[in-house]
Length: 203
Image (cartoon, rainbow, N blue to C red; front, side, top):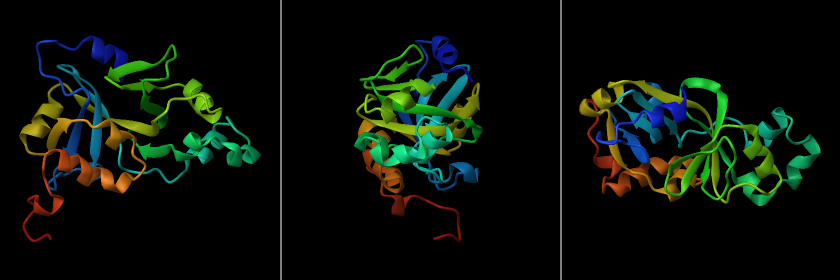
């Protein structure tokens, strides 16, 4: 999915969820999205694209840099503090071998796309190299894969009570405590996870 193309085709008159959270309801039928918080980067009549920001990948950012041969094994301990703190998330079920960096807007390259006020997306290795040198953005998370919806699909899922939506909070996007993001996102709406309705017979 081409983020720039999707965003350029958006209809200014249609409501857009770009820069919003999707928060999975307990009745979410797709287990891949259970208790997930998705940051929506593109939404138009043609479809939507976003990243799950609260499900960890089983590897560290330093390990990822070594696998990509951006740093040597001996360089891991010399990574700048910001580099050691970057979370690596399972961004969604589509193209899981493809990486993206969601980051604060104090970094820019030819491939960087501004998503919303204060947040941008860069899908190339340049930003990983910059972070490894201590020259990257002040805040960032790495996501592998993304979530994609065809035209009208996301709207149908929201209408079926699959998702709650709210404007995104960048502190939550970039927070290191991934497990806390679900309850923190619900708190924006004043919702306590314990009081959300679930299927009968489940606690």
